[in-house]
Length: 305
Ligand SMILES: [Mg+2]
Image 1: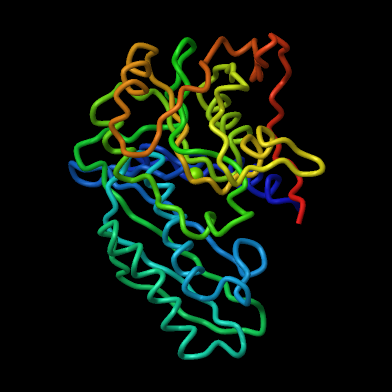
Image 2: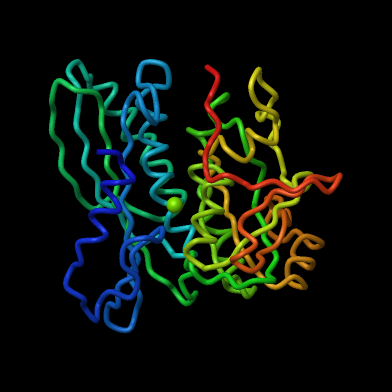
């Protein structure tokens, strides 16, 4: 069974509806009504050999990334971090120095975003290092931004620059956009938001599907990172669209607010307007400068390693 099929099947098995569940599966976090506050919850796993390479990257980088990736899902909904719990499955030969490095990496991100680790479970086995992090956040005075809130005719914007994060250590050292997301959501009418974990193309598809809109992306507007270099099979633009692991924010808002945001650049990280949302029947399109339009497929490009 493929991951996608498994997720679809799980979602088809309805859990008992509850007044507590404000947003169930399918967004970056679940949203729960908890007293007068909204509690946001997300969980994420990091596997040696898939999301990092313990031998090459070290345990500190793994701990850092595990925490940062989980926080990026809170950022996607403009939540305020509250606390986290984790599971760690240790491989054979994991040393005391490795354990301290793992802790150091995770702790640096927890401290930077005021999200203390408050519990967890440790096991060991003969397989590779596996880390699961569950984060809790609150709306903290800012309404959670869902993937489903976009309407046709909004501007589409991204933070930062995209592509090639796996070529360097950027996919290990990124900073989750918690502060940026909360500033955006507090001051602007952000319609929908998602963090770019699997590539701009795929995450844009998810946002459009959840919102019931189409999109037009201007190819020359996509901010390609310096790491997004041309390879044998791909252009920098394709790397920016398909590589993923950028952990930047993709969001929609009214065009006049996008214009102000791009002009004033108040976040300290660049904001770029890359296109607009359109009617759903128009699909998700990439528009080239000479006017050529092509379907933007919801798939990443194969990495050349
Ligand atoms: Mg996400």
